[in-house]
Image (cartoon, rainbow, N blue to C red; front, side, top):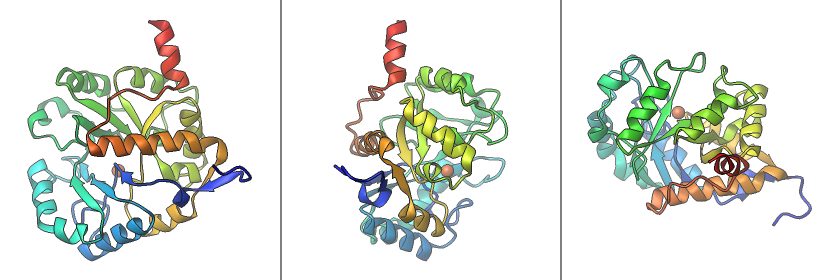
Length: 262
Ligand SMILES: [Fe+2]
């Protein structure tokens, strides 16, 4: 497709669906005003975006107001303005795996990404002690966790041994696309490249918090060797939005090796 290039601009790719953003205004550390949110979506539309999941942090300690009902209500109040950008939006959430998750999380009220896929996150400094237990609970309820930006968790090694274990627990991994541009530092970039090259990601998101990050997206260049893998993630995003996602991980090196072990 790009025979003579050593890198490809992200804006040249088929970026139609974003599964992770903090564009819903006034609910977390992302966008503060509806006008800026509409501006962000309009600029993303110019880059080709058609579908945007709005995934505010659901973290009772930091954002006690962010119940599923509150997020749905804020979305209901501003969805017409947001979609005047030309981008279709859906309300979901990014769920912090916190200590008392088992008591606080209600699968029946969950703000998922559709098809019973739930975006989850952890602290960048330490792994949630109950991560595996929570994943087990989700799976027991027929819910598939999607772990946001694993490349940013400092406690996971470059050997990827911990992330392979998590991936094998019926959990999908979501790349923050800006990690590949080094916008969260070199360590996150190097780990993102490793995870991508090992075929452990399934979805991709912007995790957009500000208009400045749209300029970063515009400047982002991917190494040519990573383009096909990111295209697969973008297609998976589209399928999740349309409800046609089959829940099967890409035909990666990791999944091949998992099958060999069975
Ligand atoms: Fe996020």
